[in-house]
Image (cartoon, rainbow, N blue to C red; front, side, top):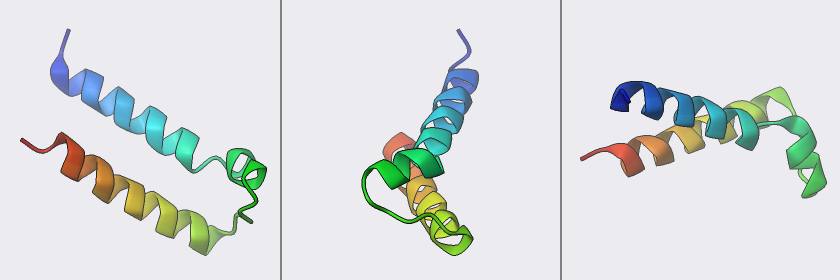
Length: 53
């Protein structure tokens, strides 16, 4: 298995799920474009830090 491909797929999956408006509404967060962008940026920073050597 290609580690780069696995990382890219995991990243895409987690980012997609974590910024899904329906999932966010379920926990009481009102999704708007600015909030989703901020959440996505925070999540990307977290994943970059977690995956860096």
